[in-house]
Length: 471
Image 1 (cartoon, helix red, strand yellow):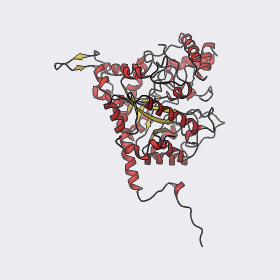
Image 2 (cartoon, one colour):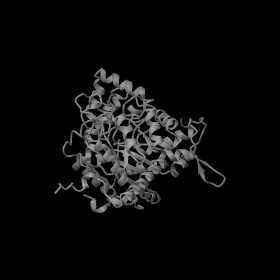
Image 3 (cartoon, helix red, strand yellow):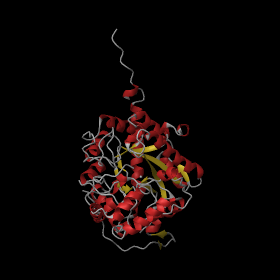
Image 4 (tube, helix red, strand yellow):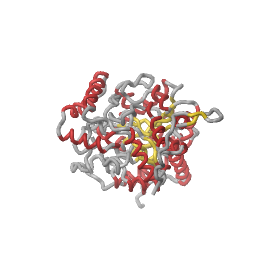
């Protein structure tokens, strides 16, 4: 995985899926994605605001053949891995552009050809609802997007299947199909009703980000902390804690990307299951509130969670970020044109205009190198540990990614770069998807424990019988 940008902001299927599914066995090529201001289009600006050391860098080759004729090297490592990306905003294209994964995505980031080239095994499709454009209709918009993911799986059963559990992901992997999962990006999409949260779970949603760039009934967001016109909560709310506990009970992963720092720490303290940051990078390297501080990374790791590195240029390159701030302050016309076009609904003509405008802007704001993305992975591994880092691209929700990382087809370049930096094959496979599978399995296990504890009682307050008046 659009509200209007602020200068201070980082620039029904119910019958088909049951509540118990989680426990069943169940560089210029940018621009087509629909814009999301909080995940920063190329014209966005930022508002302010002991682990494993990295090994030496041996020379590596793409593929070598061992004595038994088995290919080795980074390509073989990548091709044998279960690659899981925890955040892509492609449902916005499904709904708004009538895009189909069988089509050439063009300057977009994902289609079946690119998925195959990148050996992408599982994708968490983001159910993101623009809180301003769909105010009061958040649930309907979310249901439309959920339906769009199911429609893709129904149209292409030979290439893609819906997945609701770790076992489903493994089944899809064995069948050489894309495992399609879903995550709701922003608790505002439940419109303050925990029953809707449960319905989303029944429909197959397996994580929810507590906030997007807007503070909501669940807690404070990192995206509007400096907005004095917004009522804040000093972190997570009581309702937010109730939501976290219910997510634990069902087996839905709690996602703390986008939330304010205090909200994040309080969510960790509330959750009995490991928590993820589905698409966040390291603030120590790129100073934006959307990224995670080292203290946050350590706390997440201690709780057993995982941070999935975001690919957006403004989250992985301080140089790119500073230059974008400069262009914004100068009201550079090329910058402002890209910003305006990025926020428009996508049509083929609009996509072409945006792409052409980005080509012009890149002369002033060049894409950062891929090494910047790998630096973030390195840092996060050093701080949190090798078991607590993964990838959450934000593809189809961003308009700028590192040079050479133009789509999911380029994911093997991450494996190549990590191997060149001396990462062991087993550790690379953890980053590519193994760590996420561990966390997801622990969330499923925790849900079973909680459900067993509550087998003979239902402590959910909205279902508790009303107290009878004294006689």
